Image (cartoon, rainbow, N blue to C red; front, top):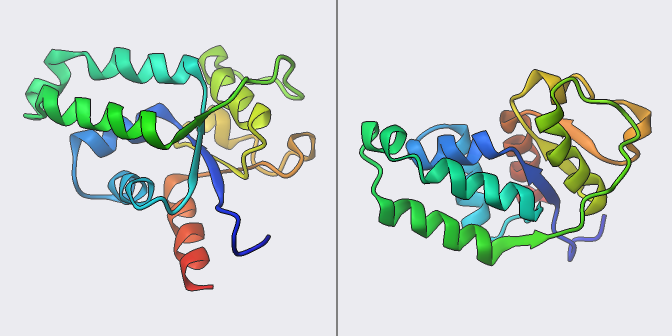
Length: 152
């Protein structure tokens, strides 16, 4: 991989929601990496809509004292940093939870290097040769990849 090419990743919606809810932890480190353009975020219109829907849940974010302005800032960042792609129409593997297909389809359609998730339905696909060069990994493993890329 050339040093000039950024790593690319689809990041599961729940990781970004966790990052918005708490400024600490691994999801927040991924958000910070996105803010500093340390990787190319790959996404789809479907995920963008899912994020907007989840971030509109006042009861959830009110409980954690996350303001509408903070959520709007994240939506703006997502819009600026995400490269929206056309998801692949046919998946080479089946996913137990059909809602997870959206993320896998975007990763494959956008030729992402990584699909980052904490969801066991996606993580069980890690290493499947039918995914080609796409690596499915946890948020902690992705942070380690970003740290290693930054050092080299």
